[in-house]
Image (cartoon, helix red, strand yellow):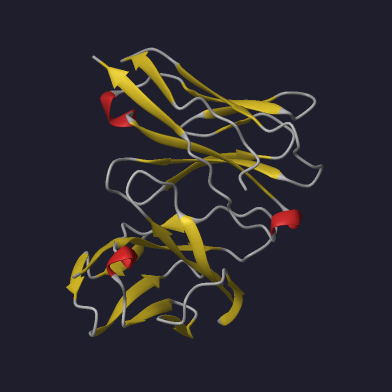
Length: 114
Length: 111
C-alpha cells in the first residue's frame, strides 16, 4: 500500500476560525512533510518531521502549527489565516528524511480562506 | 532555488515516446535526480530517480549523461493520461535531502 490519505478534501474557513488538516500513511515511513501549492506554481516545502520530531521549518508563519502525534499521522493546525493562505496543502511521506528515498504524496486539501 | 532547468512545455503524439530533457549542470556527486509528475488538481506522483546509472521501471526510463549535467525522462508509449506537469529535481545532502521544485515541463499528449 503506497497510499497517503488527507482529510478533508476541501475546506472553507473564515479568518477567525481554527481548523486542522489531517494526513495518514501506513507504509512505515518515518519522515512526513507538509507542502503548500499555489495555483500554477510548484509545491513549496513548509515542514518536515523525521522520526516524529520537527526537523525542518521553512520559516512558516506561526498561524500554521504542525503536529505529529505518532509515526503514521501528521496534522496541520490552522488559526487566524489570511486570504493569501488559500492554496492546495499537500502531505507526503518517505522512508526517512535522508539517503535518496522517494516521497509519496496525498491528494491534498484545497483550502479557501474567506 | 531549484538546481534544474526544463522547457516550460512540450507536445507529444499519443503512442509515441515522450522525451523530457532536464539540465542540472551544478549537480554534485552525492545528489540524486528525481522525476515527479502532477496531473491537474492531484498530488504529485513519484516516477523514478537515479544517481549515476540509467534506471528503468514500469512507468519510465531515466537516462543520465556520463558527466551527470543533464538527464532525459522517457515515457515509452505516451497516453492521454500522461498529460501532466513533469518536475525534474536534484536532491542530496546539500539540500538536506529535500525536494526543491522548479517550474517543471507541461507535457501535453495529443490524440
